[in-house]
Image 1 (cartoon, rainbow, N blue to C red):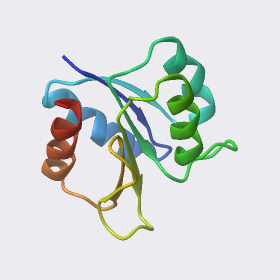
Image 2 (cartoon, helix red, strand yellow):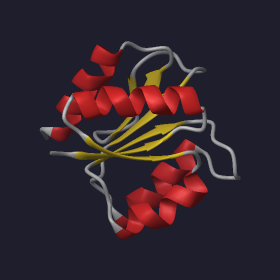
Image 3 (tube, rainbow, N blue to C red):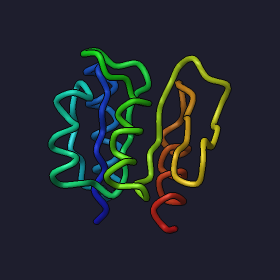
Image 4 (cartoon, rainbow, N blue to C red):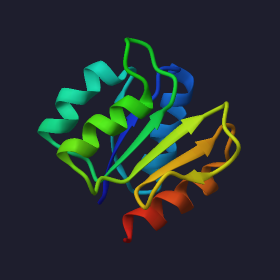
Length: 116
């Protein structure tokens, strides 16, 4: 079972995504901000990082992704944002997913990223 690290500051969205991911068979570790998530992720890296772009605490989702890519360069990352232009690939392992999105769209993207 693949493990997903979810970093989302909005509790209702975080709880919903945890349910969606668990129902799809993923193990999930969920955090409200990047600063508290980073040391735990570095210590025990997930199979995929799913993070909001705008996070409290002085570190946004992009900075979290960049920090993790230094120690785990192949880690797939999906950055969620309400201020983007759709699903955009930064590179082979980083994607920007525009909010709102359907759970099926998210699950399909994760499945594609995790099978490579």
